[in-house]
Length: 199
Image (tube, rainbow, N blue to C red; front, side, top):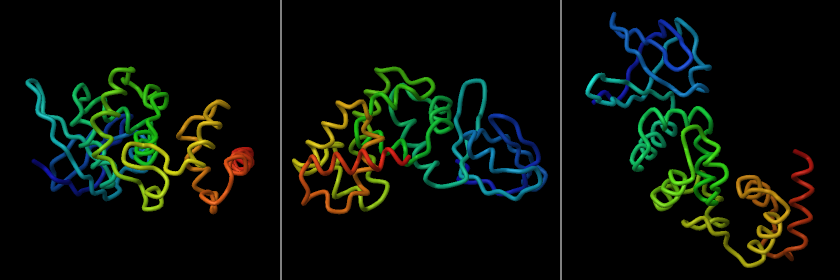
């Protein structure tokens, strides 16, 4: 398998680029957000995955290891192929996706291209133990199953959900509240609403 390809960008399209490596042009399919960072003539290093089909050999590439690692995790889920995984990574950044898995945000997942309710449920089921936190601070806030730790925080979270906010909107805001574990749930809710109003 080709681990990475390093060369100059020879051509850019909506869903792929062609990288010239010693006179050989490799067609590499990439998420839209990463393709938008490239320019023709630019030197690039892409971490790659070779998908073998009956009728084609397709290269999928990523500029960073976090995108590459998440891609590998996504295609390990039954029903998610490389093309669907690429579409998901074009619509959501890795940290957004990790947060959705941690907080069991089915609504966020079903908005991703090619993902219905059943596939979203499979993603939650199969990835909840594989995906850790995006940074160390998450560990004092969300456990491995996506459940908030601390009764007071749980109560505040539940109240905000009833107000129409999603887990992916709530968690980053509550993480900003420094003394959340020593406060009353009403105080957490008030501060969270203030922070959300500033966004």
